[in-house]
Length: 495
Image 1 (cartoon, rainbow, N blue to C red):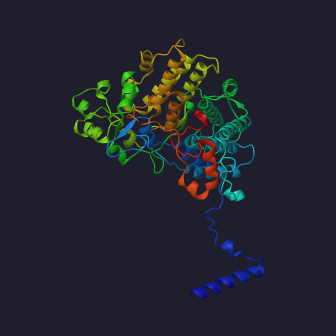
Image 2: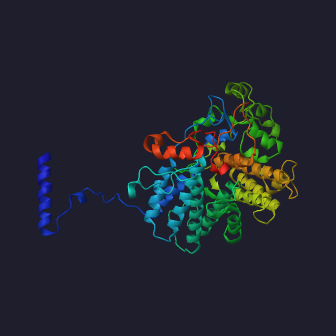
Image 3: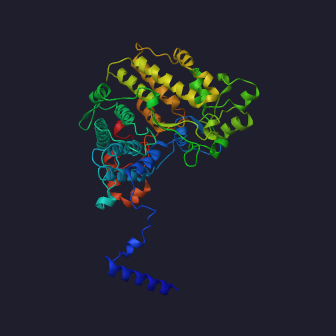
């Protein structure tokens, strides 16, 4: 039977060769319903979803927002070691988007943004990374890329973001497949420029990065480029109640077992009488049983991250004295958008820039607008607690002794206030590791930990790099850390 079919196919092909040009057998194997190429719009949808759908409990342990009671969390006790280069997999799709986009198009501009976004994350995680030679395996058969210095990476991604903004500034393209801003190029420009400010502020310990003067570049962006004007401009992913589009922690079993709020995070809200706590955490079982209302700050507590998890477990399960994340985080399919860069963070960056003398302006106004926007966010997405998060409540909160901001305060106090307001609204948000890096940069907030436990500054390079790119990864370690690939080593940005 098989031979008969082969003879029949051969006969058909021979006949076709007589009456027309000979058929290519490979063409017979192409499924017309499954295209071998794709459009930039289709790529953009997947790339944007992957980039913005970043919410993890791992940084919440390092940030002292969560504690674990059923085992040791390496993040909670600062014992992480090797990281991974998985983000290069995401970057391969971004490379395809760039290759398929015509020069000067909005799609090309967005490919620069996504490249900058991922390379920023990678260099913050590791230090020196493959950048200029990365992602050239398919195009140039370059499978062992050299590592660029962290300074070169920062210079490169800042230039890419500037290029992205310049392209969009003179572009009226209608782009499709945009699940973030629905094709609104001005909103993309605002996000891109806010992101540039984030990176420049990350480098506050430096004067220059390559040929870029940090302070003057920051001021030029503020004076000449569109920035976010409200939370409506947030770079965020809004979820839908449909398969593969739901909030990432929806129905997560982890929330129902050994995961509780950290007592130091709870205390940060309680000390400031911050009603955003009600939108983030539950009352303790003991407080709820005692009939304490939602807005009673004594109804909230958490586990101590600096003691053995068995002790925290007793406090949580036997005494009922630990709050958990509010149910909406794992019971509501849409919950809240995940923000990778938003108006609240931008305004606090601007406030810090005024404090540091990078720009002129009203640092208090920037600070207060950031806090009010954060209240509005939780008011919208935590409807059961919205009554406590009105604009009037935000104004009242800003007058509190632990929160009130005055431009006459000493520089250090202002930096502390700004850093705390960047930290508080990051719970399960896309900028969580940015909050950790901000704490490394500014010293605020101070993360509670057991005696003798030190903060970590990076991840060790992946084992795959030792196996597949040994010369270049070894050169990178020697150039930065004198041969010691340790998570306790500071990369260039912190030195």
